[in-house]
Image (cartoon, rainbow, N blue to C red; front, side, top):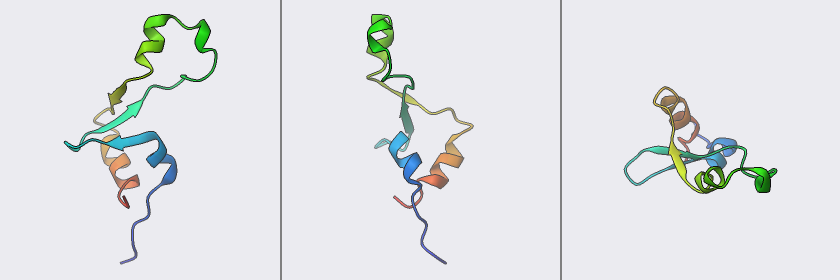
Length: 65
């Protein structure tokens, strides 16, 4: 079997926690941040768990890590 390669686009967007969960950052964080409400910009610094329906596909993309 050939080695599995990591999908670099997925590796930049998702991270696996110590407990095995896959987390992501919020989108729309870079442009026009000064126009966005303060509670929204505070949320941009946090990570969010990925929906359970997407987890198997993302794990396959991150398999080479």
